[in-house]
Length: 524
Image (cartoon, rainbow, N blue to C red; front, side):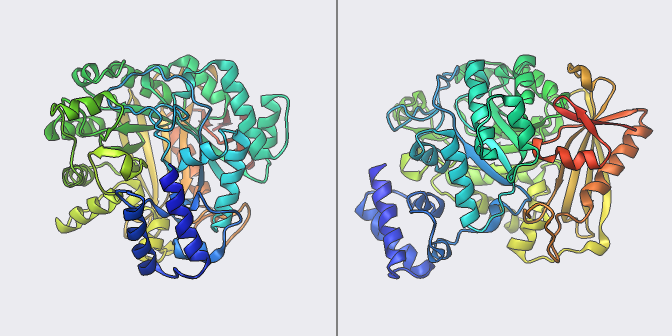
C-alpha cells in the first residue's frame, strides 16, 4: 500500500509541476515508477486519483483522462463499504484483507472503492459525500445517484447494524441528521442528490424472504447475487456453502418482489473447465430458473493467503490465462440475450496482488477485439446503449426512427416482457422490464403486474435539465411506461406496481401512481 501511495503521489506531483502533460509522458513515468517501486502493472488512473488533494486540479483530470463513462448510462454510481464484519462463507478462492483484516471479505484493500473506504475510516458520511464531491469535480452530474453497498454479505450482519448503517447512508445523501430511518427516507425523495437506486451484494443463501423484506424497507432496487457457477459438484469442492437450489429460489423471490437481479459469475474455478464454463453460461441464459437481468463476470484469480493459492503452489490448480479468459468471454458474448446487461468484466484487484490468472486490466477490450476479428458482436444492453455508442463510437442519436420493440420470455416461473426503445440501427435509448409474477410473497404485490426496471440512457443530467441532442428528459420513459400499462391491462391485470427508487417516487406520482410501502402502484 505504501508503494502504491508513493507511486501515485510522484505522478500527481509531476503533473502539477507540468513535467507530465500528455499520455506519452505519463506512460513513460508510469513505467519508470513501476520499476522503482517493484509494481508489476501500472495502477489505473482512477486509483492514482484517490491520493490527490481535493479539489482536483483540472490539468490533473485532463492528463489522467478521467472520462464521463461513469455517468454516460444515465445514473452515477456511488460504491461504499460497511465496517468489515465476518462473512458466513469460507470459499477457497476468496481473499481476506491484505491490509491487516481492515476490509470486508473478498476485498483485498487495493480496489478503488476499498481505498476510499480505508481513507475514510469506513465512515459512511465521508465515503458518500467524498465520492459525490469527487465525481462532480470530474464533471459528472451527481443529482441522480445509485448507492452500491459492497462486501461482506451485508444482509448477514445484525439488523441493528444494518438499520444504523442505512440511516447514516440517507443522512449523508440528504446532508442532514435524522433520528428515524422512515423520516430520512422521506427527506431523500426531494433531496438535492436523488437516490434513484440502492444495490446490495449478498449470497443466495442470505437472500430469503426476511432478507428481501429488509432490503426493500431500506429502499433496494437491485440485488447482486454471488452465484459464481451453477453446478453443485463445484460448489461442494470450493466450499461455497450453498447449493444451486438456493440460487434458483432467491432469484425467483427477488423477481417476484420486483427487484432487479445481477449474477456474479466466476469462470475458471477449480474443478471446472473451459467447456463446463460455457455450459454454465448457456444454462444461465437458457434455463428459465435463472435468467438474470445483469451479469458481472469475474474470472477466478489466485491471491496470496487463500486456500486456492496453496492449491496453485502445489500445482493442483491453474487459473484461466488472459488469453483463455478473453476467448471464453468472447464466446459467451456471441450468444448473450439482448435483455441482459454485462455490467463488468474483471475485478478491480490491482495487478501486483494477483499471483496467477488474468494479467491485464483491459480484459473487456481484449474480448471485443476477439469479437471484431470473428466479425461477431455482442447484443447485450451495454453494447447497444446509445450513450456509450455516442461517446465511444461517435454515433449520433436518430430520434426519427425510434420505435418500441417487444420481447417476451419465461423466467423464474413467471413471464417477462422486455420493452426496448431503439432506433433503426438497434441502438438502445431506453428499456422497461415488465413481469407477470409467479408467487409474490409481499401482500401489496399480489394480483399486480410488476415493473422491475425503467431506464433511459444517455449522459446523466441534472433534474429538470435538458440539453439539445441529449436523450434524458425527452419522454422516452413515459412512452415505455404507458406501453407496459397497456400490455398488463390486456393480460388481465388491473393493477401495476413499480419498484421505484426513493428519489424517483415523485416522478411516478406525476404519472398517476401512489405509494404502497416499498413500491408505487396504479390501478389500470
